Each structure stands twice: as structure tokens, then as C-alpha cells.
Image (cartoon, rainbow, N blue to C red):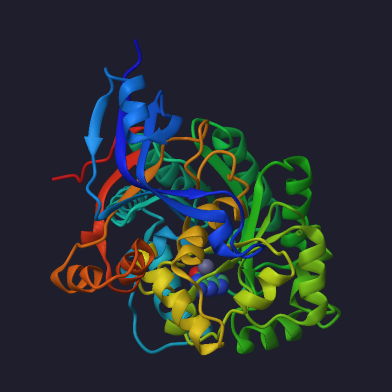
Length: 434
Ligand code: GUN
Ligand code: ZN
């Protein structure tokens, strides 16, 4: 007989997209909730009494009223190789890449170091409640193996790809159009769809890929259309001016990808802050997703993502740390930063919208919404249980709260890894390594 685990306590439920309908109509909390985990999946949902009665033999894990059972957090854009250079001071994007990022990515030429960073990164992010992430690796194929291997050890669903760069990067961090194609293809054959792995074809961004490399990766995507394609778009104004210099014939930044076949439903564009009207229209029409990286956008000084405007166009949007341009491994901190950017734009997001973005929204941006990101029967059993009174300051604010949404908001704004009570990955409880 397969083992069953029953989690009971306040439970977060989604019935739709809180950017397409009033959040109150599509997001709710079952205060007396229960979720049954079986064979790595969510077997059923219901009330505590009903599921206890139906599954008396299940192992029962009770969470108190000051907890919230959520889908595991999904971080839709990260660079795991930048784990050790997070919080590097004083540069904007291009200098930050040259001075901090590329030297560190070079260090991952050592497979042992890559494996150590991958393991450390996944443990750090699991401790912060992140069960799935979409990561750029380095140009070295073994950096992709390192992450997928570390994820398989932990039973995690991961999206990743070899970062491709054939110009404007130092010697030792450049591939070619042909080797990027060949290496990415070999990695797709090795990993895509194996266990819980999804491959994302990954040109870093137009400044570091020649049109020939972008074209080669466009051809690869056509050959493997169920892979994702992730890249960066319109993050900083200096970067956009550089793209205009490098591609004088292009209509805009997006066009440098579009003309090479790098736009479509499974495209995932990180940042997308300074978009032109044509780019927004084209993204909306294509079905491509955008990923908001708020701590990165303030840390590197990039700008304020237009969440309200872009979601109004029905563009799928995910949420991400963008480690290590982002200044935190925590999706709670990332939700807080998204709230702050919303405030600066005059469109504050509700706690329900923030947590939806960090789970279902990110899952949808990665085309994983039928597997993860929401607590639904049939989905994989990746869950994060929040303690909504994890520190004296948060507990004090929660004691004043009129409802659980106010408590959740205090945890979003002030919580850290102490707010992560438990993490369940594929139905198994994740335990911190000693
Ligand atoms: N644009 C191209 N590469 C990167 C990166 O590593 N981080 C960020 N934030 N932006 C990028
Ligand atoms: Zn990035």
C-alpha cells in the first residue's frame, strides 16, 4: 500500500487569475483545510474532518491556525552560478556583469565547484520555500548537469539551460553558434523530460550572442518546440542603447530575438522593463511570458516593471529573485519588493496577488501550471507551509490583524527563512542538511 500523508490547517486555494478577476473571487483560504499527499501528488483536498474520516490510516501533520499551507514557491528566473557573488556593490548592469558575474561564472569551469554551488544554491532556496526554479547556468555543459543532478537528488522539478554567449564576454566564457547548438542539443537529449527536468534554450541576451548564434538557437528551438526559451529583454536603458548599436537594422530589442525565431508561447523574457508599444503588442500576441525581478531591478538600478499595464494586456507574468543580480534568495522578500515597486507606480498589489504570482503565476510563465503552482488534485505535491508568526515583530503584527490576509501580508513584508515552517517536495518532507 502506498503511504499517505494528510496535512491539515489553513490552506490557500486558487480558482483563477487575480489579475483577470477581482482577487476575492478567485483566491481563498480554507481555514479548516486538508490536503492528502500520495505517490508524490496531491490526491485530494477537503475539510479536516472529511479527510481524516476518509483516510484514517494516513500520517497526519497538523498545522495551527497561525500557519498557511501554500503551493511551493516557484522562482521563474535565477542564475544559480551567481550564488556566491550576490550582494556585490555599486555597479549597473554591464559593469556588474563584467566585474562580478563573469569572473565568478568562469570559476564554474571547475565541475567540482559547479556541483558545490548547485547543491548549496538548492539547499538555500529550499530553506526559503522555493521548490521549483528556472535557472541560467554557465556556458559549461557540466554546469547544467550539476544543477539537474542536484535537483534530482532532492526530487525537485527544475528548469535550466546552458547559457550561450559568443561575443562580448571574456575568453573562457564564449562558445560559438555551432557549439552552442551542439552542446544545448546534447543537454536536451540528456535531460529534457527526464524525471522532473525541463530544458530551457538559453541565449544570455542579444549583446552576448551574434545574430548567427541567435539564429542557431532559433533553429534548435524549432527542432525541440516543447523546450522553453529563456533570455533577457530591456532591463536597463544603457543595455537597450547597446543593443541598438549592435543591431542597427532591428526595429527594437525584441526584434533581435523575433527575427531569429526566438519568440513564441514558450518564450520567457526576464525583466522587460523599458518596453516599446510594438514590443508589448507583439509579446501579448505571441503568448510569451515576462518575468518580474523586483529586488534585482532596484539593486542594479534598472527601473520599475509595469505589472498593472502588462497584466492588463493578458501577458503571463512570473516572479523571480534573479539571484545574484537580485539581492535575496527569498521569494517572500521578492514579493515584498514587488509590492514596493507597485507602490512606486501607484498600483499596490494585494497579498493574494503577490503569493499567486510567486506560485501559480510563475508556474504558468514556465508552462508548468498543470503540475505545480497550485493546490489541486493531480498536481505534484510541492508545498510550502508558512508560519505567520515566525518572529516577535511579525507575531505582534499578526495579533493585530483583522484577517489572515493581513497576517500573510506582514509575513510577506517582514518574513525570511524563519517563516518557512515546512517544505514538501514531491510529497516528501524536505529536511535541512546538517
Ligand atoms: N542580463 C544579461 N545577463 C544578466 C545577468 O546575469 N543578470 C541580470 N540581472 N541581467 C542580465
Ligand atoms: Zn537574469
